[in-house]
Length: 297
View 1 (cartoon, rainbow, N blue to C red):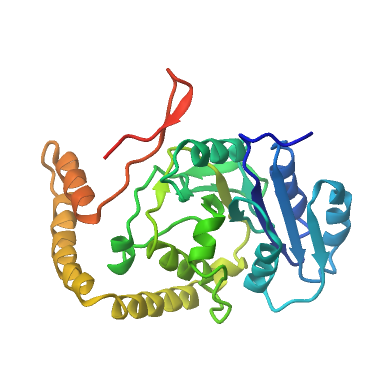
View 2 (tube, rainbow, N blue to C red; view 1 turned 90 degrees about the vertical axis):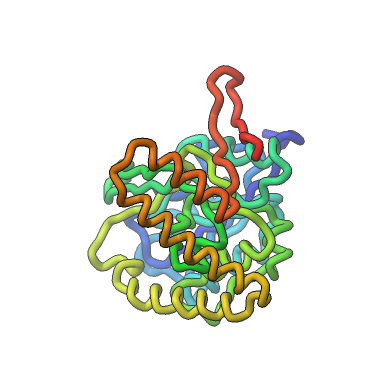
């Protein structure tokens, strides 16, 4: 099926190593959307568990795949992005999934709003069987949340960006970082753009085992995050670091308001937080126009 101009090319990267139990479901969550301008790249690290046979099963629907030893997860993802030619980028690991028709939602939003260069959805989770078992409310994000250690969590599986932002931020993951290279990428993106949130689900994280790497190494991940935040703040311009003192004081006020049981305090807290953090509005679906809308500031 030929691509049309209103379907921007979306490049999705999936790194894999010995995830035979889940990789087929991951692949199907991408290719069965039948998105008209998809570039799907799978980088396998030399799996020996049957993953390669599953990848070969779908190779005609892949733009590129390879199976060879590599230096780990982020090296595999970088290898995929180095080959990517799309206008919009994202990655999902081989035990995670995209939600149905999410690629069309992503395309519509990037087409409709030129100011959106970086997008995330509502964080969601799957169980071992692939059932959606958790969906969080839409959350607004600011770089100041990160600078003030209020960073939990921009869900990588739900996050997509324009290639132009990737290139502006260096066109690379920081491969010196072992656990939190996604977090470090978000810090760099925040130097250039706001992160917009759409009030729907796009991708999800699978919770399947007590031995899952993201849980096994959580403390190491958080330690890397702490160091990254400290380094980022230390290198901010002096004027911005001075502003952080105000933001930090205001953040304490916000948290105090959050604990009060006063009528309409949530609305007051929201207005205060929006002003302090310069939050972008949330993109929502308007059932009357049957399109996504971005309220103006």
